[in-house]
Amino acid sequence: MSKIKDRDYLALTAMLRAREAKMLDRDKMDRMLSASSYADAAKLLTDCGYEDMSAMDAKGVDEVLSAHRAAVYDEIVRMSPQPELVDVFRLKYDYHNAKVVVKAKGMAVDGEHLFSGVGRVSGEAIIHAIEEDAYSALPPVLAAAVQEATAALAKTGNPQQAEFILDEAYFKELGEIAGRVGSAYLTGYVKLQIDAANLRAVVRTVRMNRGVDFMMQALIPGGNVSPELLAQAAGSGDSLAALFTATTLQEAAALGAEAVKGGSMTKFELACDNALTAYLASAKLVSFGNEPVAEYLGMVETEITAIRMILSGRLAGIEPSVIRERLRDINA
Image (cartoon, rainbow, N blue to C red; front, side, top):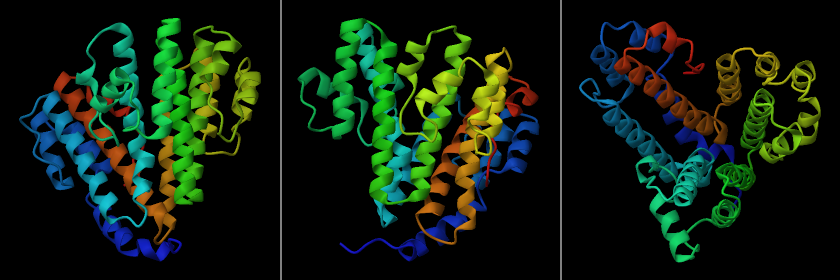
């Protein structure tokens, strides 16, 4: 097969760039928050290409947003010179389903209402694999992780051990996919996600007064900063912040250092999310290639998260100012 070139993405990049103008931006979010009612806020989204959700409850909103995400994924899979690129964003839903199945099985409860339908494989397929001890229908890395997590939960009775196993497998497979696409941009995005996940794990572990052994189980290899360095710095907020100086996570690490000492977890978590958004936005400087496509997929994820937060907040009667302070940056 001939090597994929950036120009092979020319038509797809042009189409997605044109769509970006209609996407949710800070001005549209502010208008949704200042709208006189939930219905008026929801109607504003029809200009962004969404179904009218003004008469829907939270369940209906979630179904519309999930269907929108699935449609975007399916379209780009059909059009992309490298369909596997979409899996960098789709993969987390496979592992979400795996966590739901493994923990539900361990607790003998039904978790099917929590399944996501936008992964590569369904939650039902994961259930079938476990019940029949037949994993050939699952992607290999996911299959091995589900088997290991199921065994660990049965042995220890600790759902957190199963989560650690599935999280490590998720990031391992994410890195493999980025490598197969051959994109330095996507590889950098995966490394940044690992760094952000590890930074969160360190801050949470310290705040919970858990030991280094627990922390090392939670940390993921493969980021720009090693788990060993993070564990060494965990005892000092200043040392932790210094590890990320002059990186995309600099602000998040500084807020993490404050959170370790009792500062705001909300601000810290939001800064981690915003660092990922800022990284994706760097693709705006690229005329065409896999980078703008990945950026668009990231924008869709951020848009859907913001819409769900605003609409569910408006439905629940939460003050717009409270919703606003929890919203991620948006790069549309």
